[in-house]
Length: 205
Image (cartoon, rainbow, N blue to C red; front, side, top):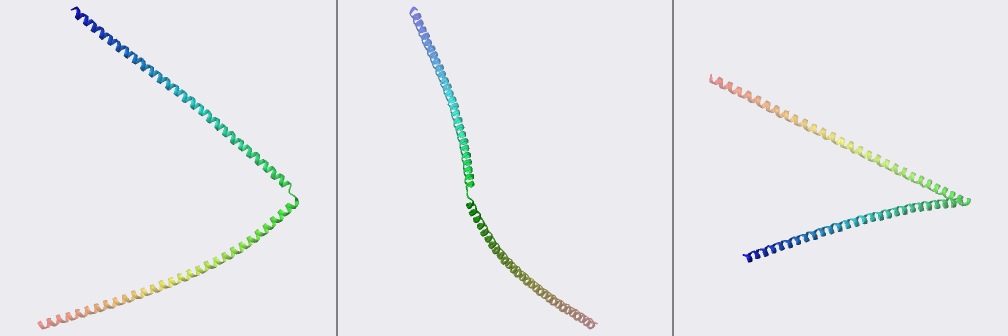
């Protein structure tokens, strides 16, 4: 009995020990899992923070680049305006420095060009008027030809209409003659039939 009790106690102790070890193992696993989850959460937070800081930095750099580009464009506009003003000023100065002889030469050249332009315009106008006259003559000839063709077609229609009427009239007259012949033939047949009937009646009496 003592041995059995001792054995049972030993088994109980072993079960309790195994249970304790399992609990310790579960506790350690839970602790490790919580530690991993905490480390993962902290790592994600660090990554999000770094990504957010990187986006902020990139936005700032992009704004700086855009501002630099805007400033560059504005400077280019100002430089172009300054260059244009300088060129206009130089042009005015050059124009003011032209001599009277150069003005005379330029005026004479302009007058010669104007004279040439008027001569060319007169020649072009004369050529255009000649083309217009030729075109009008051609259109008039076309109209005359169309009128002649219309008259010929009208005469052809009249001739065909008269021929159709003549044929229709001849057909009517032919049909009238045929109808008269048929009518006369029937009247003669009726008279012959009546004469025969009268002859037969007389012979019968």
